[in-house]
Length: 169
Image (cartoon, rainbow, N blue to C red; front, side):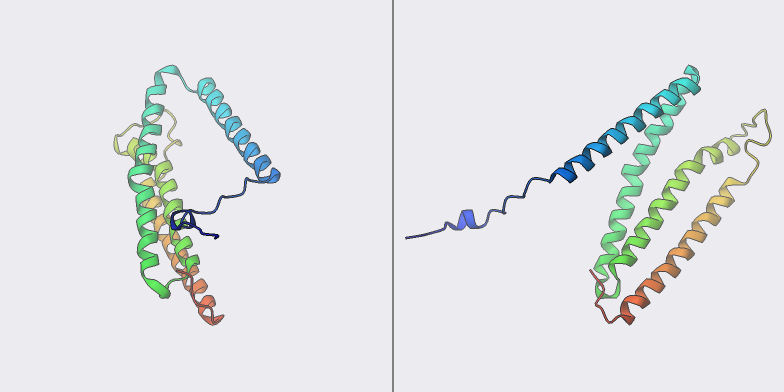
């Protein structure tokens, strides 16, 4: 009698080991990442004075905290909310919105030190170092990418509906 227990039937199937090409691709990406870290460490040590390293460490630490506490949850929950909207939203629209949030967040992280330097009145010796209104430019950037994401989402949503396909959830 050939019986299969219900416990073993519920176990997931074993996944096949990654192929040679996938292992090579992963190894190349690891090597590329390690080379990038080494290059960054060398440039940091070579170009930044020792007295400035605590400030750099603070900025990197703050960027990690902002990413983990703000950006990642915002993108995740935004995606969850858009997907819960049901059949009215195509999967590609969710990707466009998430990409827009990530792009805007990265730009914000890059520009915030300039905004802080300007608001603290840290006038550099060279007046051309901080010549712009970075707060206004960041707001305009967010507005432009929001309008672009809205237009791209509308076009992609219309294309999906026109094709007669049901949008992905």
